[in-house]
Amino acid sequence: MKLLRFIAPALLLLSSSVFAGGSLDLSINNETAGLEYDATRMGSPLHVSAGFLHHEDDADLLSLGLNDVDVRSKQSPVKIGIGGKLLTYFVGDEEGAALAIGGFARYMPAELNGLGFSGHVYYSPSVLSFDSTENIIDLGARIEYKLLPTAMVYLGYRFVEASEEELVQNLEIVKAGHFGLRINF
Image: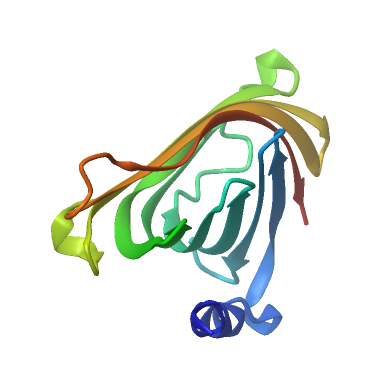
């Protein structure tokens, strides 16, 4: 039931009538699978995203993001976004949520013929964390290769960790490399 309360508002935000396109991102390794949808709002630099990351050892992460993305020319090799994400995690019997602020950057110069680099960082201090959550950090880095004008593959590393008031040790949600595919439409 808690999952439904999170997904219903996300579906309303991602209504296709107000968005001009976006991307679908799938990442996997032996123990985790992640899926993220990113939509661009028509006539603005606003990007809305929704994601789900599942670790087979009983860890899940849901995210709903809102970023203001730099609207430089399409020929620019740099793309930067700043905003926030609502992160909700479920690790064993522990669960929590936080509003994390941060952003992402992508660098893909024409001279490298489709090779690029990207990364993201989102952090939530205790003042923006809910329940017994003290803070959450979500870090990621990728090496990407554009196969087609609308599709790329990548190798990446992601680290997501939460700390809670009662726990001595931090909750590791994911800390692993992965392979992925991103399709733009």
